[in-house]
Amino acid sequence: MKNILLFGALALSISASSVAQAAIHAHDVDPSLEQRFIQVQAKDKSKRSKIANTDMNIEFLRSDSVWGFADAQSIQEITQKGFKILGNFDREVARGGHQGVFSFPSKDDAFHDYAELTKALNDLEKANPELAKVHVIGKSLEGRDMLAIQINSEPASLAKGQSNKAGVIFMGNHHAREHLSVEVPLMLAQHLLNNKKDAQIRALLESRDIWIVPMVNPDGAEYDISGRNYKMWRKNRRNNGDGTFGVDLNRNYGYLWGTGGSSKNTNSETYMGSAPFSEPETQVMKAFVENHLNAKVLLSFHSYSELILYPWGSSNDPIVNQQDHGVFTKMAKTMSAWNGYKPEQSSDLYITSGDTTDWAYGEHGIFAFTFKLSPRGGLFGGGFYPGAKAIEPTFKANLKPCLYLLEVAQDPYQVLNTASARRIQNKFELNPLNF
Image 1 (spheres, rainbow, N blue to C red):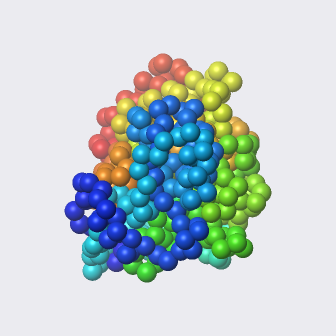
Image 2 (tube, rainbow, N blue to C red):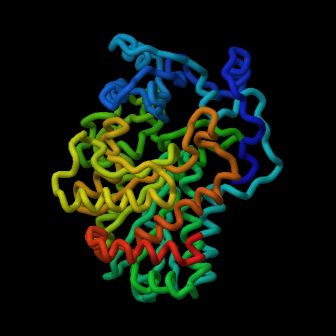
């Protein structure tokens, strides 16, 4: 995306003056709806889950506390429930450490806005017509095409968008401000097609039906970068009819929708919508996945914290099916060895419901993961806006895990076989194209 990356030195302390200066750059908002960026004391997942149920959106964790967004109503509820608020700051402080006077470069093509992403996908199709096809899979709330690129070696499969091959679905940008989650799946498509003559990658291209949806939330993504200033926007652009906007798309999926870790408060960052799949974007993704149940594996990219998450998010209980639970934990541990991310059940952070991966596995048995990308830290580690310097290393860190998911998609249960698991790991550790 051009002309909108925030650079400059990171402030290393939060002072009254820096917060006041940051507020100058905040977009106008009804004071009664204003979101604050707060730190709340919480030392275990039980306390974190109780906080998540107060309409606060938790963005990152420390050993003794959580940080996230909350409006006045939520802050009051948190206090009434006995939680100690350790810090209360203007939301602009959450820009990953970017405080005070923001610096905008004159030109930056590193991140892709909607138009640039559309061109990049179409360019891939034009350069690789025998392997790639860009499909419009639906429309966003504001009428933008939702785009997916299919990579498949069979012309008939590309033409009809269907295949009998084992499928894998990669998706990014459910949350508008998580722009890095657009770049990684896009770069995966580019890597696969640019290296189509490599024997190992060619074998994957010939045996898999690969779908990449880099931008699930195009309206929100475009809004977040409008006016040459990041807005810290998370949701889509639904007009809720009460002065608030947006539904959290990753709380709008139907499996155990609204059972915890999501909000009925329209002003909340985790507002779950008026009903399961109330939003055009999640309706599109539901129909898309259900029309491509040849997919055995799904990966949803998010920012940030460097985590590999798997179901359940909606329950503290592990997956009852012991074999499936073994596959999830084995795959997560294997991928963690490559990208250095922490593997864990989603609810180990705090309870959430209505998210993509719980729905994909709970409704359709798809081995679905969430990767929360770099940086690891929040407030002073770059947060949602780590700068262009984060793109390449984040992609490189996650290339092996992505190729691994493609490899095991034919039969994910093979990872439970020691010999098969070692063979697969060796394949990716020895190929130089896997970095």
